[in-house]
Amino acid sequence: MLYFDIYCFSPFEFNVKTYIFDLPKLLFMRKMKNNINRRKFLSTGITGFTGAMVLSSPFAKGQTSEQEKKIVYRTLGKTGIKVPVISFGVMRADSPALCKAAYDNGINFFDTANVYQGGNNETMLGNFFKNLPRSSFIVETKVKPAGVGRDGLPTAQTTAEDFLGKFKESLSRLQLDYVDILLIHDVSNPELLKHKPLISALTQLKKEKKTRFVGFSTHSNMAVMLQEAANSDFWDVVLTSFNFMLNNIDEMNQAIKKAADAGIGIVVMKSLAGGFMDKERKKPVNATLALKWVLSNPNVHTIIPGMTSFDHLETNLKVLADPVMTEQEKQELLAMAGEPGLFCVNCNKCLNACPYNLPVPDLMRAYMYAYGYANLRMAYDLLGELGTGVSPCINCTECKVQCTKGFDIRTKIADVSRLVSMPADLIA
Ligand code: SF4
Ligand code: SF4
Image 1 (cartoon, rainbow, N blue to C red):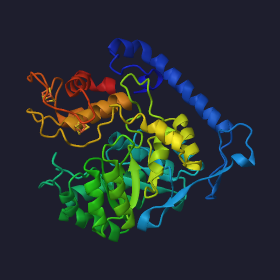
Image 2 (cartoon, helix red, strand yellow):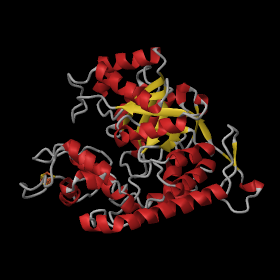
Image 3 (tube, rainbow, N blue to C red):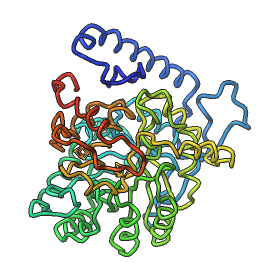
Image 4 (tube, rainbow, N blue to C red):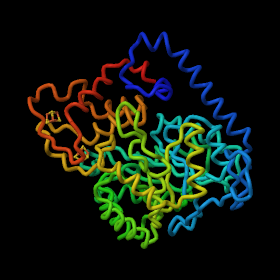
């Protein structure tokens, strides 16, 4: 992963020889780059988070009072929590220094999950949180229930005990007595929200004050899931995928409004639609515009863009101070929306099209992890979960899948599935 943060070529232009001979050099370059960014960040004056509304940009040279800008906050629905419109998607981050810099600049809402980095993401956050006043940050984590099928339905393995046990591990790793928001991870079927063992587990945790609020995350069938949340008074927060590349934006806007009107706190993920439009990573999504576009919906309360570098933080802090999008910026962003890009919009139109019943949207997600995020570990782990092997389409003579985004499904599956043959220790 480190390798590809430096050089934006195909992650698969990678083999054992280059790993052995080039990695020390590449790691050194990455370290230097981060040190420079970190030095730049620190030398330009972090102001320290005091809870005040005024943020001096630490990046601007020769600051003037005109350049001082407010952090824009919104209220997270009925939770009443005041959240900065840009929060921290910690999923891929591994640097407490980056978390601290974000925190010091007013980004005090951190999103993680039980499964991220095999639990190490929560552990890293726990080590960061332990020196902070508990009331000064907001933490959201997610627990994925066992036994949920590809159809999103619960099974006999989807038990309260499993869910409670995983959450107990999360609290221990986070070194906290409670989290602010606990989400069921990755819900795509409304039936899962009615599953009594999960409801009773969440009710118990709220009663025991181990979580203040409950909700779920969704990146498939999102409009339906948002409407479902709006129709119940049980849910406090929904974390939903939402970006300019979706092909049901009107439907999503209506569903988000309905949920927000019902008091649901709306948190958005996948706002950058995969980060790049091409596998060569030569055409990045304009992060500033993509974030502003999401925030132009007043019913979105905060976004959790993934941050892994001080450059990402710098970009996000600028949007945090000034999220207003001009009409020209909007047109510039939407001009990209007609291209296929790397982001599977999870329209699920392809679900039954493959005669071999391949999980095409999941495989496209693995492709996006590999090429959009340049995160081979996430792609590798997902491919392992899917169990589709190194040549899923080998027995098929003609691809029957018509993707609404125009993806060449067969080529992409063959491309990303090569990763399965890589030794696991080279991916780590
Ligand atoms: S080529 Fe297309 S239809 Fe055939 S197995 Fe692969 S995804 Fe399915
Ligand atoms: S049709 Fe294309 S965009 Fe829609 S879910 Fe399938 S792969 Fe994703």
